[in-house]
Image (cartoon, rainbow, N blue to C red):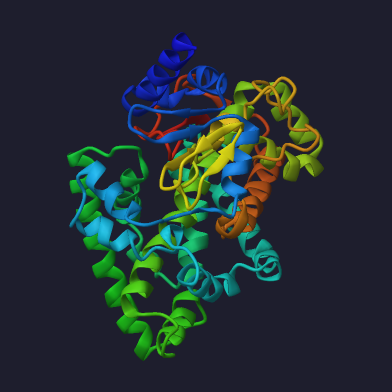
Length: 407
């Protein structure tokens, strides 16, 4: 057992500190899954098996906060008083009932199944336009030319952000997203502070414009909710607009980049998709499982003593479900390290579950399905230029930073 525990601690250390392990974390996960749930030297529990991750993200007695857990989290990372932490304290991602339900209920009106399906023609139009630009264009960076451009256009259109205002968003959201890593460094937190202040200033100005000239967009709807007493404060509106923007394209960009890389590294699967476009939906689920764009669920805190995978998690302790590991658990999936776009019931954990199930899951799935089907149909001869692309330096937000392909 001592050897297993030592291997698990080393795996966690490498996941946090080693770029090569963060880029390809799956061998490290094998050491973690031996115990299913492991209490690290950072006094945080990590769930890594499919069963344990599934239990953590669904258990109603795990909450985002309990007691002084938010303050302890800030103290552990040396972030108390920082602008990024104060801003994230208002994100619905980090809230529990009743505030979580109040804010999510207002936003979810624009993310219901009917509304998302109505976006299909628009998404198809954007995808077709992007493919028109890259087809026959020789060597391109797929991330910049397609994987970033598609979800950026979709979420900005939903929010009512003008095209001319979008050029700084990737840098800003990357800066803010660095704090979703375990134990972010002071340099990462400095960047997050700058990004948070820049995004906050931008949305404050845009909100003022929308007050005078309302539009048919999500931001206008939220402004209307702000004017109703007890619905949404101005600070909550700005903070959650930032969250919606970042969540709306960062993870989907990673889904598209990671997904195309996986398909082109497995040419028989790419060919199969081109020949069977009806598999696009299932292929998207399998790609989410195979190389998840988010590797960890948001930390949960036990509000009472809870048993997970046979181990007792004491009240007040923090648990992180490493969903990227659960998605490769051989106890749940046959040949988990093999990509199979026809896999029966991929059931990825990538979007979480329960009250905090990813609000944009249906939108991301639709974008992925339309994108992969159209790419395989219209540019089936896509090929990798660089077999070992550059990865983002982060662990949790997991994706290729660039991806050279011949189109």
